Amino acid sequence: MDKFYFAAKIQQEHANIICEKAISIGVPEENILLSRKACNFLQIGIYIKFSNADAYKEFNAWDIPGIIEKW
Image 1 (cartoon, rainbow, N blue to C red):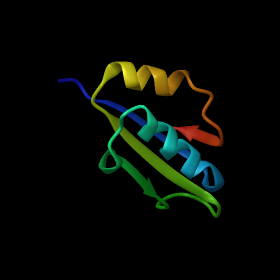
Image 2: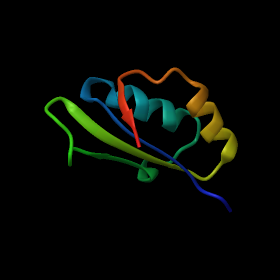
Image 3: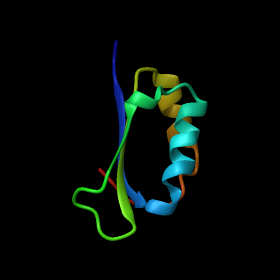
Image 4: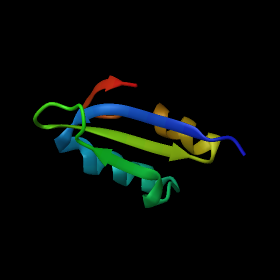
């Protein structure tokens, strides 16, 4: 089974919106990680592991708010 990943530095205020969107399309909470390492004040890194290509495509098609930089 293939795995698909989304990783980005985002504005901290959008973290909950992005997490809720991922959960709403079937991503388990344990596949979402938030980290402040290497981020400036009011920024956070978000890492999401998708095990379903359709969910990954749907998530990336969504206009994700607050992205500063994708990794």
